[in-house]
Length: 392
Image 1 (cartoon, rainbow, N blue to C red):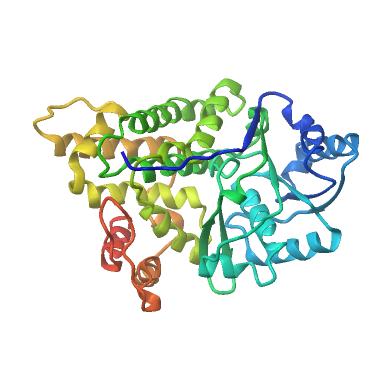
Image 2 (cartoon, helix red, strand yellow; image 1 turned 30 degrees about the vertical axis):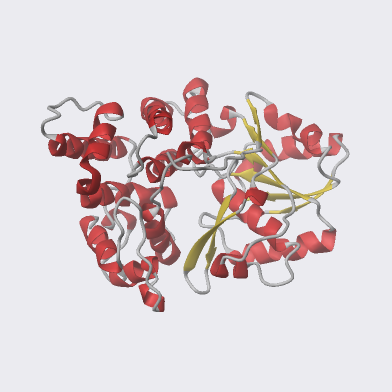
């Protein structure tokens, strides 16, 4: 097991009706709030009115900024920074899913920064301070409600970059599974693929003696696999949503990766898909993950056989670990199919035109500074292209 430093201060307030507590929860932390959200769904469902009533009851002033879209845009972040500075905002409340939370974090880190917030994503600059962020979660998927990570798309350059800092972990995250009941089926599937990928990126490792986090990863994956089909069949199943929603938080708050080398190649490859084609992140991951597994499993066939037996329920002779491992990958594909997720790049509307460009961008080769990605197997741009081709 590797050395690690784990600090996850986000307060999770979980359960029915908890969104109505947001004003009192924020009162010790804020005087003027930026209420940040996406399209019209929070107004159609009545959540917007509940949040506004709670903020007003607590005597908190607020201004609002809507318009967040999937693969959140740098242009709206810049608009939010300008608004927050003018209004002297001291707290940001994200009401939505991962895109809204990530946009809020970007605004939070950009407010006190003298330059352009994109500098931090593009150059990896350290942030000295950030405005605090809190969350009311409406889409369990990204795990951004308890992580210090944010991903933003620069629509002008078609680049999508992530950034992470402990200063970006939300102060308070409210999670009421009732708020998930109105999600479209495709959003449910995308969310499941996203949270599973967060676990896979940590789980598949060469690090030895990581039994505890192995078991935590496996239990979280089994919980998702058991309960996700239930919410797909019945989006009003509170108990199943509670399991899936909390699993999404645990998947990305950092705990499951402690003491182990991590991979993150699939995320790096997917960011190129959504940067150019604006596909749903979870949909891209659902296509890429089984292909990546097929390409790299021989680097540690025992790890993939362990996944097959402990997570996917494969029974087979341990004298033939390769067959066991491949059956586990096959069953994962079937599970994604059950969740009505895309299976190929063609399903995502992606042809072969930009595959080589995306492979070179993912590894930096397109910018004459190639750095292979991944941990299970170091992937040069040719490897990434091979994986893209497995997805056709």
